[in-house]
Image 1 (cartoon, one colour):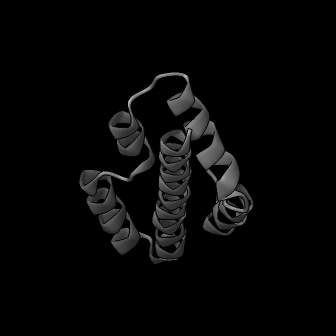
Image 2 (cartoon, helix red, strand yellow):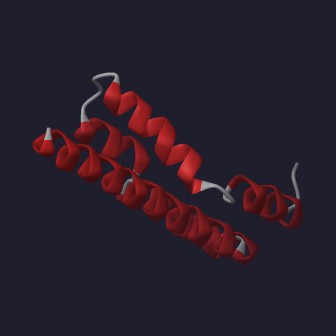
Length: 94
């Protein structure tokens, strides 16, 4: 079983480049995937947040990991939204 400290360290490395993940989703958008579906894929659903909250109560060391994961996904979503907005603005100019 992975120890909490190891999980925290591995998770921190995974969250260094939200631009990459946002670009991945933007690529899917450009290939015809629905923006609404992609937003749902990026967001952390309320049921998952509730589950993580319960897990953090049992294992307090995980709270920072879960908080970071939610923050990261929100950052990815914000970048994705900016890319879509830029794309829509560019399309109007042409």
